[in-house]
Image 1 (tube, helix red, strand yellow):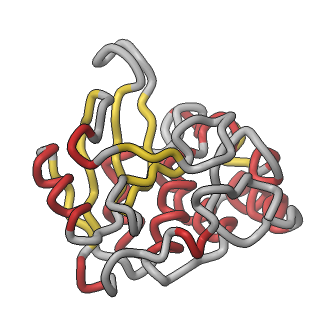
Image 2: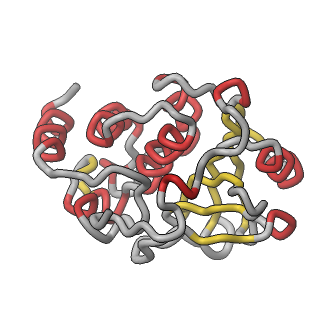
Image 3: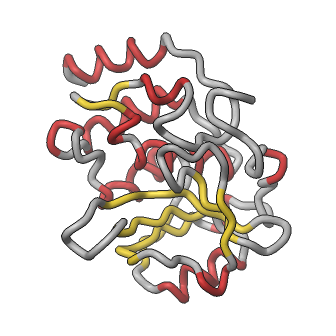
Length: 199
């Protein structure tokens, strides 16, 4: 681990982070954490997606530890976030096997089976816009819960499975169903009302 990673880890460890899912990376305690030469507020969506996926899969990890591990995959010194091709390796490192797919149908089928997934997509026009990564799962009502959809939105958003994802999908990571025990208890994680920084 290099000097920047060590410095960032020491900085991030000192910031208390409320338990539960992280939504709105520009809100609350998480926004003040560092990633590479940038901040989680600006470049941390991949780290947050991995954190939320591990939490929903029942194998939570400290957020600063996830950021420290993912420092090795940063792009443009962290200003462009983490290399989204590395997300499968990140999940496996923390004990959650995942398979990368490009098919919207396979993603929807996995969600219907109760899998926790990471979704990587263009926020606008292909190759001319930013890339965003979110963690998604299906809740007890059958809708898709999207964590950290927008950096200034502190709640989980809900979309029908049939129309998800609406954005231009690059690919998705489907967590191994062996790590799941049915549909994740999304409601128990305050998915519908949690705002990062406020329990």
